[in-house]
Image (cartoon, rainbow, N blue to C red):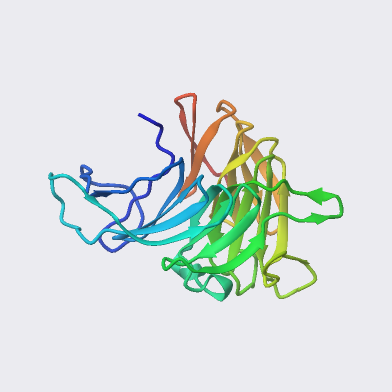
Length: 271
């Protein structure tokens, strides 16, 4: 069978987490190309992305757990972003303000654009993920995304969109009170607030811990990096995986990462 490229869990209230009981197949949906992202908006609504350029919202009305054959998911909406979708991130409820109001997901494409999309299939905001300024030129492909609630960058009342690219760069888009920042192409309500440089391979995983003021990234250079968000500086790098690191997560003050070398590593964040 082909490898799994995305997975998400939610409880009966729509809260994401880990499954606590044996999984039962309730419904299924198929794509014509590689699925690059799966996000649960609530317990019955799923948003998926695909290399065919589509972002689709699905709804399952049959929530009864059954051993019978699964039902097909009902297609709610489809958006064609006209470029392979290479990354998809959920917009948490607390981040649904400003340009992300009513947005369920932010999608990143191979051509280097970010789109905030509702379950109904409306593109609420669209802007270019990379900039060219003072010698900084980010390659177009968006390989990872993370959305943080307002306050991730100090006193900003805007949410923050962290985006990692194909050669190791990470940018943070928000709207700080100081508007003397590079404005986004497409939707100039976004401003480039931070630029993180240190990885030498595609950044394929991002997660942000607001209480610790840390951004954690994983890349295909085999390293996990921990960043000081406000300073925009790398605090330290963690090795131990092969080059093709898979995913990175934060559980409290512990970083959990995996790679294609059949190793899952856990690292405690020191004070």
